[in-house]
Length: 213
Ligand code: NI
Image (cartoon, rainbow, N blue to C red; front, side, top):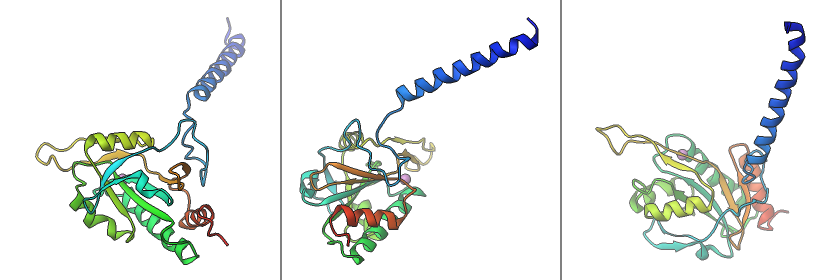
């Protein structure tokens, strides 16, 4: 076969391969959550959320049911995070302040910071960390099993990175970064990734809590 007559065959082959790859991606792409949407409000194919019992930054045992009647604005991360977590917690603090300034009942939303690094994020560590961002921010830690259960229920990926041999306490944790809004019944409402502005988040909080004017 000359290269001239081979070309259409190769082109057709390439098109077919792309088509098959596309179908494969469509079939196996997880539906939930949908971080591309902003602000996201896709209903998850697999429910996001669920019951948890953890320990707060004041050492009290706290369950999701303690927040019924309030919205929960949840962020999963860790206090030693060098970059994304402090920025996202700061955004949560600013969004809450802005929404409150615009008429939201300050008690309408419970901001929760759930650690993905329970080894280092002790009660004492969180007690020194969460007040930096908002006075209402609740830091939550627990046993590795409790944290594994809650991260799984909220579709959060977290994996501890390698530590150097001489400093076993010095490591990063790779983790999903998204702010989850759950309603008064603990049901998933929305996910905010890094794309939404503080204004967007505040506006959504005002709308969902019924305080929007
Ligand atoms: Ni982080």
